[in-house]
Image (cartoon, rainbow, N blue to C red; front, side, top):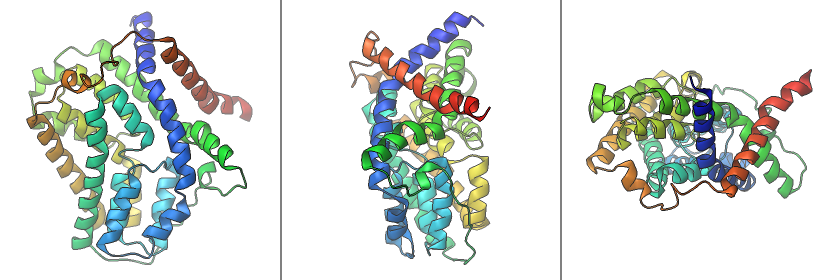
Amino acid sequence: MNMYNFINELWVLLNQISPYLIFGFIFAGILSVMISQDFIELHLGKKSGILSVFKAAILGIPLPLCSCSVIPVSASLKKHGASKASISSFLLSTPQTGVDSILVTYGLLGPIVAIIRPIIALITGIIGGISVHLIDNTYEDDSIKEECKDHCCKHHEESTLKKIFTYSFITLPKDIAKPLVYGIIIAALINLFLPEDLFNSYLGDGIFQMILMIIIGMPLYVCATASIPIALAMISKGATIGAALVFLMVGPATNTTSITTMLKILGKKSTFITLGVLIITSLAFGLLIDNMSLTYNALTNYMPHTHVHISIYHNICSMLFLGIIINTLILPKFAKK
């Protein structure tokens, strides 16, 4: 492998993603103060009707929950009397998107996908919750007592500004830094080594590409933001926008750990319903998008600044992002020694 080409590809991806990611971190920090775990439990706990399904889906779209807190919040909702339907809705809508991933989606895939993605997450959550409500609307009083010990779950006596700063540049990056770095590396490798029109040559257009995305995405641990550069790299190799959208839905929403957690919290029947809804809705929306004949060039034509010369501003944002990564992943290891 030509190391120079690889490093250059990584830097180009960083320049594309970092400005939107930095602003996404800041907005997520603001939301982490505005929408607390207590607020979520107040609106979703002790509710069993359809209204809680809609509330869970709506709250899940922008919610900046770290991975340590998605599981215990879901278990806490169950402990506070939330129905399986509302928990299913919450688990489907929350990991698919968030303020940081919406901004990065806008930066790399254009405003249309940035709008479509949270709408699809919302619809998926509602359909999943209603399906569970109709088929398996039972409740067992056997809460899963998993305590989140990360900073985002603690009630510190701190100023609001400090809470925002801590979540924006420490807690959230700590949660997504590793999968995000892996995602950028995978995207760079795809861009460098996979042949052009790979997907068209071997899978053709349509549903076969989407089935492959489901097979790849379901067991893979990739956060909503890290999935974006991978999806973009797949598009550059011939994947359709619909197939990429399937990956953007399924990849962040599930992995082997989250599926195991669903089994504990929801039970087998509701877990299978939730996963089934995710697969069916991802295929349906993927086919719908492809029938609209959208292309990457058409999507990014709405953003005339997407392909302009990389500016000093982009380089500064990339350096800032690298500093956050170093502070999150590397420095703590030295501190333990």
